[in-house]
Image (cartoon, rainbow, N blue to C red; front, side, top):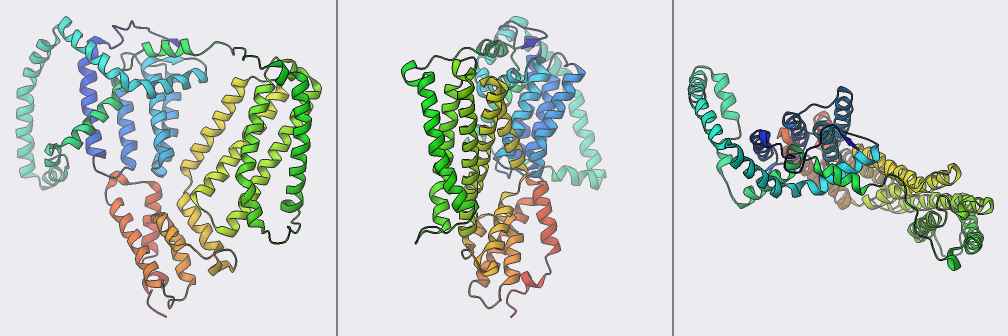
Length: 508
């Protein structure tokens, strides 16, 4: 990784710019207090990330090249899109990573392979908060060396008259302009900012520590990352020849292929062809018994392949072993697909939950990892290439997952497939449906519309549905908690406010 301008550790704080950096950190802390302290988090986090990016550019002594700046800005915008859609752990993590990458490019002007940039971002997020103490020490040293306090005092005196008269004019304008007076009255900085307690001070400290590494970007940590990252893939330690030699691995692969063939044949017979199971066993039981153990089996198989088929070894160059490994890995892919089918049968019988959605995603990632192992063997790629491919698959999954409305997806599936509506499966778990939150309201409305008003739980369901709607309106009444997903639900609630299925709950 290359850096356009490298500073020594003593100069990395940019002593001539420390007053500006401290002012930016103080401003960001105040902004964080206004946006987040004891408030719902929504679009407010996106506003803060944008402000953080602007502060990074102001604090940076040099601007990056236009091409690098365009790429960093595009990455930041892409990271903020899921946050605009909805606030969830995925979207929050993506926005933080996007801000870190933007700060890296804007402040340090680092260039190099994406692998090194990713490692630098991880280093910034994990070790950056630890820079606060040594950087404060350098700032104090800079104050003593440059006499900056006297200079700042002289500069502050020059602001007394402009600020004093400016406040006076603003108050006079407010007294003469009702609109301006209304704007000033609506500002929520007011008294709440002076209600200082232990929790608020702790929040300020967390905000300072979190924003410090972005503003006080130190170039010394890039050198540490560069030393950690190897220029080329080092040879992996040799495994014991007696147990993991060519002969042992060949025999193991033959045995494993036979065992997996038996399991695959049974899955094809019972799951794919729909053959009758032994007496007393249901498809749901068969599916549930095998879904997770088979994925664990596939993971162990993948570790075995990666460990024994290392690039450049005799095993990797052997045509027989390559054929056996490709065949076995293909059977593992089939095994994971069968596990997904098993889980699908189980969900069909017992409804959908967050954990089962996560299991589907996890199984899909395992299948992608196995396919990448096949590609690595066939194309003679390195383990670094394999790790990068899996990381890319994970990143894409997290990005797409942050845009998916899982509560709505789960609720809609369970309502559509419950016994009351489809005539099959299990009865709808109304408590779990309500626990999914406001995004489940459209599915709840569809359930209410199909049920007779005389059912015993009708008043309870309608009351809890209305309570969800009320909590959503309360949260969305503050712009800080706004999200595009929440806005769409607002439009839905307005459109359905007069529907008989909801408002005439007591009618027959």
